[in-house]
Image 1 (cartoon, one colour):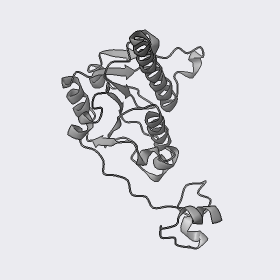
Image 2 (spheres, helix red, strand yellow; image 1 turned 30 degrees about the vertical axis):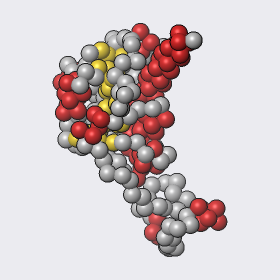
Image 3 (tube, one colour; image 1 turned 45 degrees about the horizontal axis):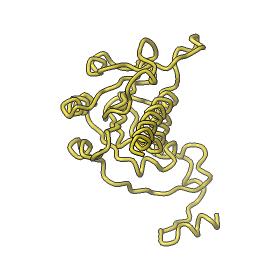
Image 4 (cartoon, one colour; image 1 turned 135 degrees about the vertical axis):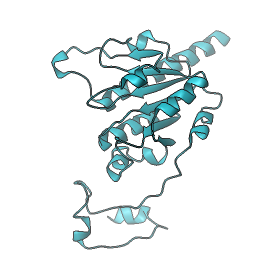
Length: 215
């Protein structure tokens, strides 16, 4: 507690009775902080974020578990994604549980929340950004696709996967090989992490190859 108080210098600290934490999720350890993040980004600002870099957006279609949401935001931030796009309705919100699961990344990652992610996908397609959808089976293995181009990675909901209306906006579907088919599919946050790091691997390899060719 003394270390927390030292780190909180300049921040208002209030001592409260233990009953204050009754409505909190488990694992709070009798400490809470009220956070203020930067405003959410709009669609126009979102498309300007990559600058000269090839775009990398993560678009979530109705991901419902706030822990999955937080974990995906955390991985997206660490793997170099430019922004995460969320749907406002029938999806997990940026709740305290999601912030906690993100380990702070939700305060740093640009996030765009829209009534329907179709709007973002259509705008990205107009900008020449390729849409790759994640599908449990039947798609390309990620190392078979060119993931160095400007792209958006579209992840579906935990129970239903990608909606057909969104699949039609995808230029390609990506699937991860599974040797235990009885389980059905990977957790959405785990799958997103694997795909994001394959994207990062391909992009780093391209940069390293370009640097080698210039020597």
